[in-house]
Length: 234
Ligand SMILES: Nc1ncnc2c1ncn2[C@@H]1O[C@H](COP(=O)(O)OP(=O)(O)OP(=O)(O)O)[C@@H](O)[C@H]1O
Image (cartoon, rainbow, N blue to C red; front, top):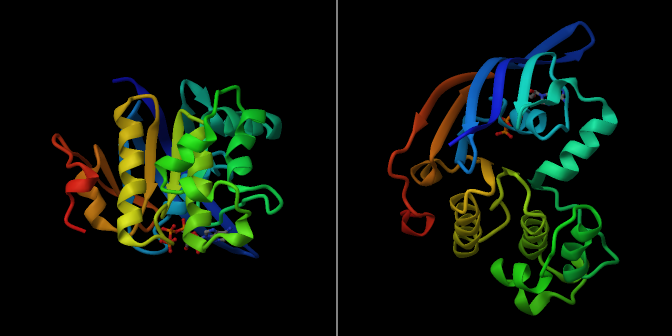
């Protein structure tokens, strides 16, 4: 496997007046292509900060973030926009659906952003929304809206899927369906999946588990025999 993501001595500080908060404190790790990675840590540990830096949504204070051989920390705004569009699928807690487009149109919208063939109906089917493709976001429940946004990120077939509590609004059965889909995508080796979660059980399904605490890496563990998501004891 080849390394797709590398954090080298990454520091991220937030300033509020003369107070400085170090949210990322000298963080080093690598992620291999196609890995299914789970990031765990208590509230405020820096998990979302890590994901935002990796996704090019926020900039480092110092250090290097190398993705596919490119230095993300050195990108200007245009380069960051291109990087996000080409490489990253985001599954975050805010759904960002376009209200006057149907579920299907929200998914197929990705055709205009990346050069991929999208079978929107099939992707909606894979997240259990086959019968909802012609509904508008306001006609869907919170969990269904979250699944449309997951379908949209998946349809893009990105090199990296960055997920912040991807199953937050879902019941456990639907959550397992989604996590299964994400694990299958990483098993196909085309997509590297990084999931931030409070759910420690998911660690058993990960290829790599990164634990962070107070902005620092507490441990990095490799699972030689990760479980299938569907075999976990939820
Ligand atoms: N934009 C910001 N400005 C100032 N401080 C911030 C900002 N974003 C995050 N922080 C601080 O950085 C630290 C890490 O926050 P982060 O959101 O990364 O934690 P987290 O591990 O994702 O927490 P949670 O599990 O509660 O979502 C926290 O102390 C937080 O208050």
